[in-house]
Length: 342
Image 1 (cartoon, rainbow, N blue to C red):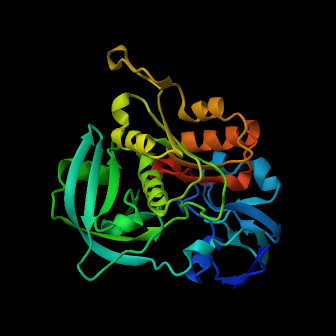
Image 2: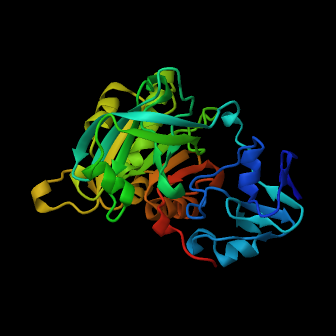
């Protein structure tokens, strides 16, 4: 067994043989930043100040050799080879939130685009899921398989849990959703999970960046913020290849019309002539950079496919002066995003 000390807090926890740093921390009720838990998103990246680790299996571009040389590691994969001192901040807002395994019933299925299905799930009458807007759940499938989906419903309106499911070619679960799932089907899930949520203690203006169904957790965060009367300026950039990919476009348009502190910028990358798209074009994170060349005073929340999240993180930090600790992300990784051993 090895001891891990967190800096700057000084908190300590124990890691059993073969256990990851993140797994041990979560087991002992200490929540460190994390997302996919599979070495593909980079949310759990932190610095090793003393000691050494087995770096585990991860996606190469998420943790480069240069970063490893500077002491960085992915704590969801790193296994201590002795006592460690690491630089990471515990997520205090998660205190008191209980991760549960629950059954649920598919109450409603609503197809909003060719490849987007909205599921609304009902919990048993005596159960309630307490969570932070932006978190996700994991469906527990056969043979130990799991599939993660962000909750699109804000906690204050969580009579039904809303998910936005994009059909993935070759994806067994999403194919099942689109071809075989029926209302009243029973599923099991574990949650809430993840640390993608609004840092309410900050007063910085907020920039939200979503691609595709990355809109789901951002929808929940914005609705909860509006419900609580958060007065910070908020700007949402939602990107898709074609206009139809913005499958709930009327909702952020409504927020922008009704809320003085909210602005909405839809961005389309591959519009066809028949789309007659009148708005912004190109990559969604590039639209942010055009409008906010200096992000040094802002907070950014990005959600969607890994290439968008990774590009946004890199470009915002390097070119727009965004502080590293003001970038929060939920990268929609799949098993295909996880590489072999490095």
